[in-house]
Each structure stands twice: as C-alpha cells, then as structure tokens.
Image (cartoon, rainbow, N blue to C red; front, side, top):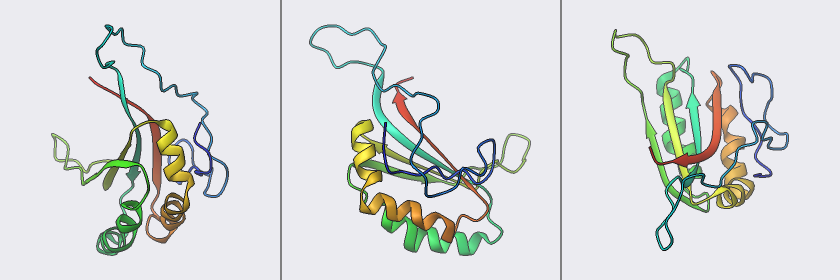
Length: 149
C-alpha cells in the first residue's frame, strides 16, 4: 500500500475525505497478475500502476487551464518514477451531452512501490498540496494496477 498520499475526493461518493490524511486503500487493490504465464515469457496482466485524476468542470476554465499548465503539470512532471503522464479533455457524448469530467490525467508508474515512493516524496506531496489551488470544483483520484485488455 502506498503511504503518504492523501485522498482528494471533493465530489462524488467519497466526498469529504479531504486532503491531508494518510493514503487509504479501502478496496484492497492487488498488484500481482492473475494471468497464466509460460516460462521465459513476460507475464501478461498487470503492466503498470496508475494514478488517474478526474477533474470536474471548473467555474473558470481559462483560470483552471492556466494554473494546470503553468504550475500543476510542471510539478507533476517532476514526480520520480513516472513513466508516462498524459492528459485529455473528454469530448461530448454521442448525443452531444457534456462529458462528466473536464480533464483526465493519467500517471503511469512501473509498480505500486514506484507509485508510493514518487507520490510520498517531495514532488508528489507538492502536487497533491497544489490541488486546492485550482481544482475547487472537485477531483477524484483513482489508483490501481493497469492490465492489458
């Protein structure tokens, strides 16, 4: 279990868990692969450990984008152990409806230990501490192993 990373659910089913407490793993996520493997081959299944941040629609999108690009992303890029960091702005649904999230960020780590070390370190803590500065509409953080489909 990763330590030192506070939950940051400000909206949704986990509202009110707040920033500043210890990282909790209520679901008991497991990182080992359940896929059968052949000797001498790389196991399929768990390839990475991911942090996914789902940002709600901000009241001021321009201010959100400015802070995210100029401040938050620059902090997050320096988190040790990140293999890949991607962001996307989801488009409208098939009926043209507004997507449920304004921005989705995905940070890939080699494994749960790398995630814990990176997020528990100075840069990871700085990224978490920065969330209230621009994500007032809410952000949901999800973590867990990423599997091949």
